Figure 1 (cartoon, rainbow, N blue to C red):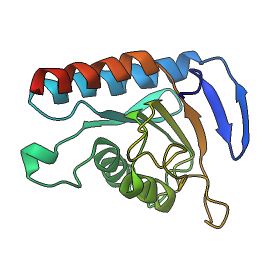
Figure 2 (cartoon, one colour):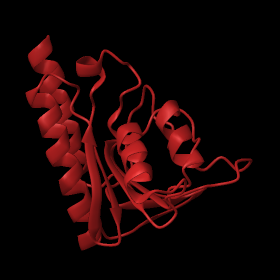
Figure 3 (cartoon, one colour):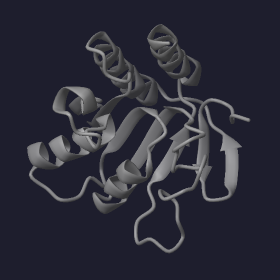
Length: 168
């Protein structure tokens, strides 16, 4: 059901791609944020925005803390990066997130014109980068980021499974 780790997905063309050291580092930052989220009772999803090799921002889910169901890790990271970089476009940045973006976050990614999106775990119930739909690469939209899926997927899935297993 799931595709292999480090897959580069551009439209219907899918081919394996080795994970770069930069993508490993970016996903490590996102995983660290996911662990922080879990430690405070939030769903363990973390995100990081990098420009080149520099981490611009990190964020994790804050939906429970803020009592705001829209406070997803990638949305917060995109908003913070736009503010910090004083821009309305993130074309030279990569967003790393431990879970495939939902419709809300995929929309924000497209609107902010994020250059690349790298995610870990697929989300078969809400993922909008190929699982349920594909907002990120929709042919009628004016921006389509490069998408790399399945980076450190097992680690990302494990965090989510452990979190929800402990809640049941």
